[in-house]
Image (cartoon, helix red, strand yellow):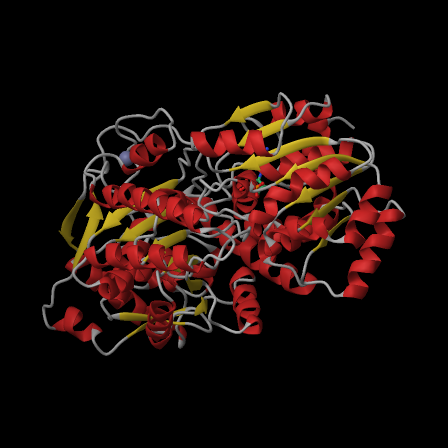
Length: 614
Ligand code: ADP
Ligand code: ZN
């Protein structure tokens, strides 16, 4: 099999992303490589595909324990035998991995950098034929980077200790010049193939808000993002506790993560989030390193982080599957003091460095903080600011950030609100139970779905009242009514109910306003973002449900079954046969064999149910 066949048949992607092919070709031809790609750019493919094509073993060095576990799980799901070695395994488990390694059972093995120093590992490594050493998160080798790890300095010794030198590849998302030079020099890359792919993530929307009350704004932001998965980053453990508690008391499925929690709780909470049992993760920056959850649809910073590097990395955890996602920073002047305090504290506590190193790192950190504060204050394009910081060319106006979007206007939606509320009431009166937001939208928009005709909902006086409005517009108004307390969603069954307050709008003349984005005159620049068509959204939701069920049965996170981007493509293509199913982006042979029938059936059922007559 060649590299493209592998990409298509094993991983299910039709083509390479920018930079991937050059790096893979480099490794296959025996050259060292240095890949600089933004988070989510697809670095892992650049070592996984060579690993499958080269003889012998590929060693991936990564500091990120959860990433190792996730990737090994994902590789196994794609039918590839892989393993990891890190401190989460006990002695017997590690011995078992060593035995399998020596027996030639793995093509890819992930190891933590500390492990390279262990005699036991060294002895095993000396007996293996290692063709390729891939150093992930390679910026950790540089003390100019935001995440210096002294254990990375010893990777070179390890490579030198091998009977012969394998091909070496370095991969990072940090692009500053100094870090690049350090990586090449310290890792002693030999005339590497270098690629720097664009740092732009067109599917991410960036905004900075400087609110009077952060908690109020947070409630508003979350009310508009119900059922979506997101991370809220706070600067301190204490604010993680406060924010998480507050959200829970408001009925959000929130969990928390910070270094002060017992290991067990951290693991449990992280898994709740990964497996979509909890939709909101409130955390310090201790959370997320190596988290490969692809369906995170917003990242809100409750406090300003310490650097653009940190911000872009944390915000970049949104929308990894290419779907549209929001990165919103809530800024206040007090954040600057907290950040300064944390910088001083971490400089004085770092025992791995001597005094001079510490002082240098502190100065660097303060300079980075300045750049971060300027980001919060700039009136120019936010995306442009970030790209500029990483030395990349960019458009003057991106059209998809808080500063480029001309802003918002307030519109009166009292009339529409009355229609929505009375529709919720009438549907309930007719059926005798509450239903979900989706069905309410369908009734208001006059859908001729079978379910609606069969239950006589098309005879209601509110049927079709908002037929000239878009589905997301109607949903947006419902969200607004929920945010204001006139409607509420019952979390267990996700049904929409009217509250006692609704009467004020229905009978007492209370008005309702909503802030909506002013649509730009010109079409937004073409982006790689995935935007599901209105009519496919419902199918997408039903495929998501099936995915949850299959993931639960298999005991893996939902995105290991298929990413959101794959489900979006599936909902668009609506495959009828297995060979059509195989053409969906992200569907490889193994996954098609495991899940194909279930998804095809679901699509068929959906199409039958929603067939319009006439
Ligand atoms: P990084 O390590 O650079 O942050 P990943 O390697 O985790 O990014 O890739 C991010 C996502 O993109 C993953 O879901 C991955 O499967 C997907 N991906 C990688 N290569 C491609 C490709 N050529 N086409 C489509 N999706 C891809
Ligand atoms: Zn912009």
